[in-house]
Image (cartoon, rainbow, N blue to C red; front, top):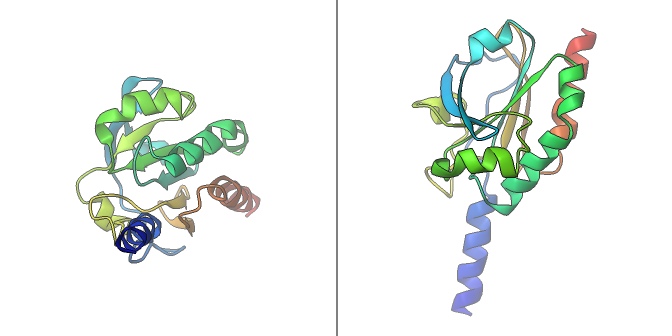
Length: 175
């Protein structure tokens, strides 16, 4: 019985959402992050990227975990849809950041960059995982060119993030 309770607690910890997330209409805090694309070091500055179009920032708990691998692969498979809409996609995590170079090639298929969360970013974007301190929740934001949150999707199931965010980018482009 003790093993069953421990197993349930572990599953609950991995599926627990963040305390909150930013709502559409709120300002997106500018940030600069360091990470990898195709195994090579890259940096990203939100304000600069927004000059070219909207940005989809998807936070994921940790590199090389099952749900995060599925989410990254889903974004990689759909990257052409985002690019056709003029949107840039980036992944950000606080978990297993020492393995991001390999994660960028193996699970992101070198299609987009992944970054280690910057200082204060977990607080600014309200993506701290309640039951797993130090890890980020699975939350995706679409940020418009005015540095405003246009869409928020926070769900531990990794499979709807692409569909939800591409629909939000399309709606943003129709405005």
